[in-house]
Image 1 (spheres, rainbow, N blue to C red):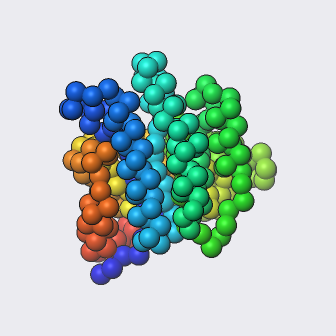
Image 2 (cartoon, rainbow, N blue to C red; image 1 turned 120 degrees about the vertical axis):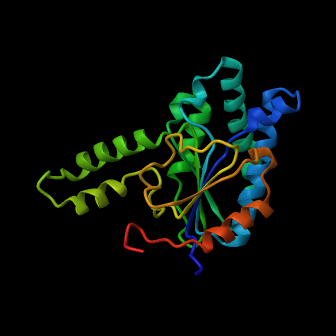
Image 3 (cartoon, helix red, strand yellow; image 1 turned 180 degrees about the vertical axis):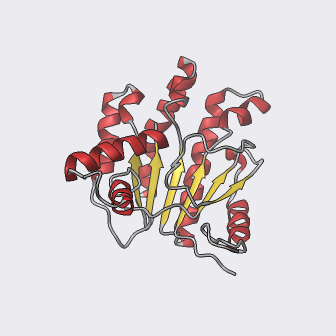
Length: 235
């Protein structure tokens, strides 16, 4: 058996703990995680994975102590100002998604919105960068948007309504996630793409994100390709 991999999702977890274990400032862990983020994006482009979604931060992350929250916002600013220029050379399209107003940085929010609204080149892999993102809020805003724009009736069949709401989610036009990887030792979803992960295969790793490598990524993908995916059907 060899499962195809159209949409890969990764939770970037463990930056702070990586720094703490080394008696380093937590911002050093975030900066190291940023370097790994760029390397993994490059790797998935080489692998020609059509869709990649990376969970960089949630609203809860931005409610940490002011210094930690400020470090996260600065990390995002550095990524946008520095790393994106290099990543734009790759055969991919990077699109931020999330509640950018929660960053409390008007200039950064405007730039992220500009990048989000840019045209998507259909022939290039799409990389969704989840920033201040909440899966439960994504569902709520999808329902509100679809009802406002299409005046959906509660009498319509459930499949049509679900399909219409899915088309208004932040991840659209990305398909449902096939495989979600969470490094960092934790074994939970943390409100990440909870609708899009409904039938995804999950892989957890004890490796903290700043130590995550392309080699481990390939090993997890190879293990995923051997799994028996039944999507709720009888095995």
